[in-house]
Figure (cartoon, rainbow, N blue to C red):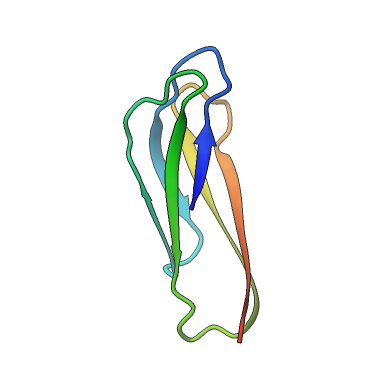
Length: 78
C-alpha cells in the first residue's frame, strides 16, 4: 500500500490504470484528489507460478496530466 499525494495546484482524478501482468491488482477510490491530499492505493501481487526476481509496473492515467504516472513493483519470490 502507498499514498499518492497531489502536490499540484489543481484537483487530480485517476481516469483509469493499466497493468503489465494479471498478477497485479490495484484498489483505489477514483474520487478527485484535492491539492495536498492523499489517495490511498493498494497493490496486490499474486506470485503463484513466479520465481526469482520480479519487476512489474503499472500506469495511472490522471486527468490533465501529459503522461501517465508509472509505478514499479519489485519483489523476490522464493
